[in-house]
Amino acid sequence: MILLAGCLANDPCPLSALPLQRADVPAAPAWVLHVDCDKLRPSAMGQYLLEGMEKPEIRARLGAFWAALQLDPRKHLRGLTLYGRADAPADGTLLVYGDFQAGQLERAARAAKDHLTTPYQKHRIHLWLDTSGNRNPSAEQRVYGAMHHQRVIILSRQETNVAHALDVLDCTVRSLRESGQCAQLGNQAGSVFLQAAATKVEPLPVHPATIILRLARAARLEMSEASDRFTATLSLEADGNATATQILSAGQALLKLVKLQPNAASAMRLISAINLKQQGSEVEATLAASASEIIALLKNEGSQPESKQPKPSSPNN
Image 1 (cartoon, rainbow, N blue to C red):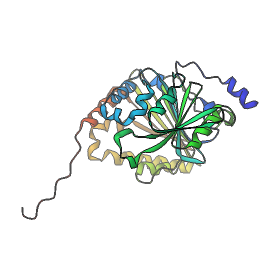
Image 2: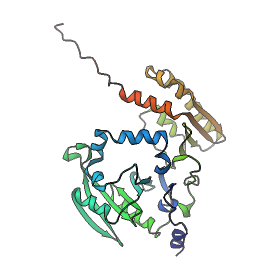
Image 3: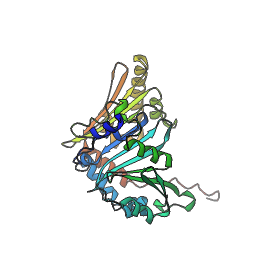
Image 4: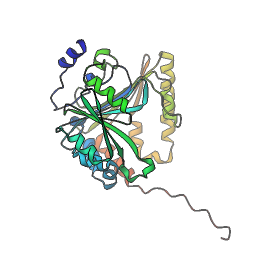
């Protein structure tokens, strides 16, 4: 009854802006990322991303399912929340918020390959094979999905994740709102369009930048844009001041290393705009720069032809 009352008290806000809905996320996620599409869409970065989605190769990757879903990100997409449960952090669950019609997910799922459906509580969970990107049949993956009250579509590679997400949305299990974990999430004031947090920082040990994350016990990321000013802030929380100092030193060394790379010249102004500071057991890295300049850099990088390795010379030459 307490959980039900909590959900009723936290009735979804009007969809003019959609910050993270804490009542829709499990009580203790290993990590969570939320994008407020209503805030992102009119920004320069948002317009750049929408332009990219019009490219044929991007449309091909989206596949037949997304085409059948008839979800126009320029109009209907309101927010995206992606999280990993503490007991299975590698298996993500995606919550897609939008203006949906009754049966919209079911029609799209039925149009996909090898569609099946199973009942769960008062809901139905759909299964289909993802054929996006024109991949080989051996690379096709199962996708599970469900719709909750025409407000949110749940997608995951694991059926148990979809079932658990439905339990959270039905208020039969505790949510992030009740647990109080990641207290900063959901408070997307001003022009903040992206928030992320992780309590289990386990990056792949393949890049020096990710190794720094191993020293942190928690991480937060926030992005915003206002008046062509893009700001991204990464906060790393350490076990103590001494470890935080190690993170700061490693970050400063990494920035110096990046500046020495031969391909860093075009991005030097942005790299130099990154500010590192330590406050007790927390280290904060902030990039504040012109959104137009960042977009121009991204477009320039995207237009560069891929470097080809020279062919080995023939022994007869």
